[in-house]
Length: 125
Image 1: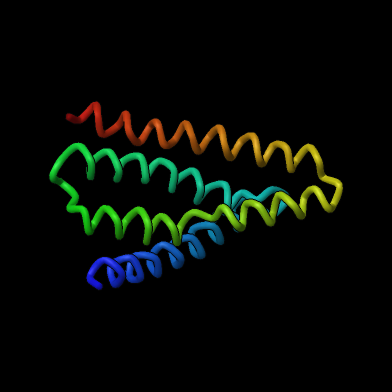
Image 2: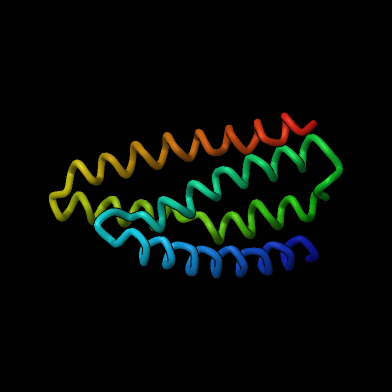
């Protein structure tokens, strides 16, 4: 029960962070491209690399906190379902180049950011 409560609490925080962070990014860059979703997914990819590496390679993050942060906070923060919908809408609207750019950039940059998160922690060890 403790883990479920931790996940629920952290998920709420991740969802609120996604809402405010993506809104801020959209206010800066506009809505011609899913910039807000792209930004939270990149940040989430980096953070999950850091959290998992710290949680699995050290005692800095307990198992309960690691699960709360990854399943809860990162689950509430990152937005694959929103990414899928926004990409579909771009395709439906005939914006094939933007849709392709969104898919390619999101996958490539998120993988890069996950790797950077892992490398960050390993370089500190």
